[in-house]
Length: 345
Image 1: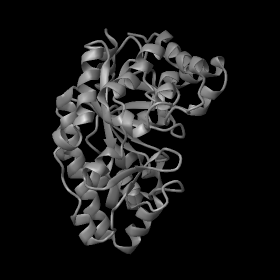
Image 2: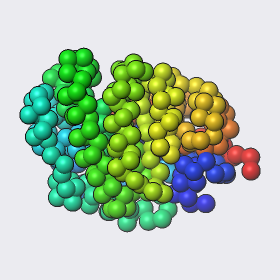
Image 3: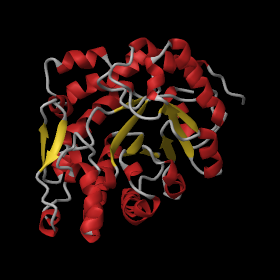
Image 4: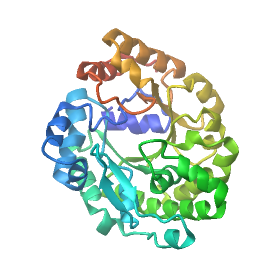
């Protein structure tokens, strides 16, 4: 099987000879080629220039040997396309500005045409799909509605971006619900365009879902995510949902029509697999800090993760993004260890 076939088969929970592997945030800050580009270009220049985004996306494929390539972009791109300003802060990191947290402010957000407002992302996916051919899977992505709302509403995003969204949850729940619905509809169109451009799978990042109680998640975040998924109608293309710090939300997420649930390092994979009852594949969930240790520690962490699932319906990944100071040899060891574990037929 090619790496692409392996990845897609694992998404469908079919038997595979080994567990496929890729790494969240593999395209970017831990790669030496990316750091060299960042000395010449800003983060947003890399995102908005398809040829440069292609270089960043291909580097982990070439250096690490991962089974899937993820487009290089940013989850805040949708916020900009909806009418907000996307700026770089003092650290060179992107942030959204311009949303007035009122009914009029939310009403001004637009449902955009991805082929116009985000053409550069679609071109990057097209280039990436042509570059890897049928050998590697291509992954597109976006933020889940709750997480994008957190960044839209955050007045001080370098602290906890969820604080202002949680404040609005209590102060004006109807306004928050309306914002989430607008984001859901716009994001669905954006992901449909990514799939049409050549993405073999798409991932929703709900990074700040863990800031919600179960009751709050079921009242706000889950309905918006469900609306997005229903609008997306991705058909045979796998949809991966990642949430951080969300062990208490796992049962609620399991009921969503996604193909794969990606969980962080605080969730026991065996327990999660039992809860899902074979209805969803799992992705994850090695602690990113394990890759800051020794190569032997990396190898053991990989074997432990695969051992908890038996490799069935499992895509190996980290439990969150790759740390920027991860040694390259440890990232390579992570992939190499996954490739070395042969599964029983």
